[in-house]
Length: 590
Ligand code: SF4
Image 1 (spheres, rainbow, N blue to C red):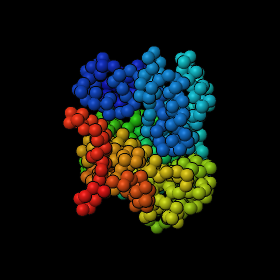
Image 2: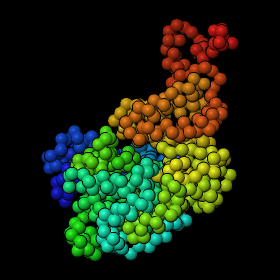
Image 3: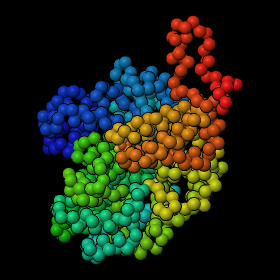
Image 4: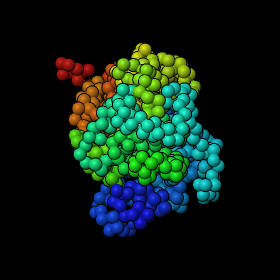
């Protein structure tokens, strides 16, 4: 395996993926061998293995089943199905069955929120799980049928495109964007991208042309293009669809970028959960090479550029661009200090443009159609359209493209959402808006989003969502900085306490303080936004939190009564619960 990767340390992640897939874990002997072959300290390899949730130091089942723990899967009945699955397979959650055939566990969102409950078997997506599907899966596993003999419908992934606009309607012929860019001139094409007003579609909204220009002006001539297809934000799945149906245009956008910045190498960092797309994407790349759209001397222009696909391994933080670059270099995906930004010191310390899948798709369209095609749509500060992944309580979950400036109410009408309590816009790190705010608009100047749009109707308890998101962040914190590592874990505990009915008034105050601390002192965007679901719902539904509180001033977050049991026995006291009696403001007991 290492030889196929030319013993490059940067390929460590890809090598580990193959070892995990072959042996169902990373054996100690493999770590030893890799350490010598790749010249990486053994402890560093172990650190990488431990960092990514798809790698294991101890054997997993021959069939490794992971079921998505996303809030949308829970809304579709995940918990009961999960229990049913565990019973059917006779395996405990988090364990490997005694015969070693199967293991079962939770995983964070798998990017199938429009067709859940969903999961993965040996990395391949399973969709629309129900009892009969689970019966079938259990039977296949017990018969030890190879995955390629499983019925196709278990793995069926639909695009579910319900509303197309500027980007999804365009049918660009292969090579058309590149030909237009060369015909117009590379510098002029950058100007068109500038005039179009295109901003990064990952959520932050940095102007694309400026990023590309900065990179092209760097002194170092070894430069890179990276397409961030690691959409791990629960509720986001549009990149899955774009790469399934529009990959050629995305690769074309990357190649236009390479021509502008002078890059010879590009990477598509594909989230591990989209393994099912890998072969198809490789064959598109191969076709592009055969058609002189990748490789040496592209279209006889003198441009040399190629694209490599790198699969992630189940770490949400790798969606953060500097963590993604670390991961591409074969390391744990720990966010770097910024500045320097990737545009000056990115992959291997060289100038690197990192953009989202949708951004490259839009850039290809602009290269063909010119800036006005894009700039004439949207608002003053948010040009063009935004592609949304819509899930949750609506009749038609799927992909919708809207001009920026569209109201939330219009979107809800289109996807068949009734009796809506609120919408989580932008995933767990985004904003929760209540049904009093549906005249707000999709735009960088109002509701900026990477694309996740989760709808909750009035039968839902918003605290269930908050609870799910708090667990998500505690699980996904990379652990590098203390405010986030400890803070997200404390937030999770505090939310558990309140949701389970053990909170008191002081706990909400403490919760708010903790939120501010995590938000203000964390190193990267994950920690800085981890408290958003709590803060935005506390602001809108303070009564909801209050309704879960006990009418006492304080209750510990652990079983104090149980802890005092031994002391009570020694002191011959028989007054369990005495410590819970509260004092009033004057200090006397009620
Ligand atoms: Fe890691 Fe969280 Fe710190 Fe970001 S904020 S570096 S995810 S621990």
